[in-house]
Image (cartoon, rainbow over all chains, first blue to last red; front, side, top):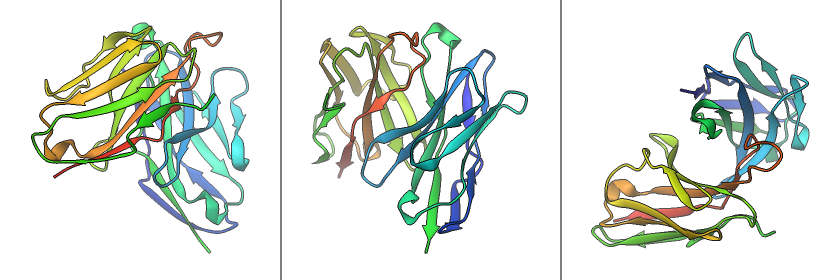
Length: 115
Length: 117
């Protein structure tokens, strides 16, 4: 079975400050990892994904994430946040468990950017 | 492509009524997922289809919930009878197997916000 833990339910930060949203996963097989963003009253949009290759993945809107297999983590970072980054962020994992790569989502982290 | 299209965006219904949520996946995508989002439980997978065939419905909470996919471009999620605890945002998502062997991302619709009073 696979699971995702997002360690912080809410992360407040000031504009232009750096931010890190934490994500840990568990799976008994190779994993593929995703970060999605959800703006109010919207669906989920993909920020970035790790399928293979370089463990540092760059996504849209200046976000990046690093896959750390030994620590089973996939933390999301941005060096300088904007007010417009205020949203809910979801980490997701899929694996070959069951053969179908069905994504499992974390509970989400609410990023609140203050002016 | 217009993306995954869900309708309606909002639905308010009375307890006991039948509710049908609709989804049109992205053309060419062979996987379709139904998720439910609540504050208490987060984003839960209800059921998914592959090539229009239901593969795993173990996330469907009760027999009151049913889902169909009569063709590659349409799916429904039905709740009959509806109850207040069914109030949530329901998302449909689709994905193609393609060259990534199914490891790629799912694309989400805008969701249907269901309120049962």
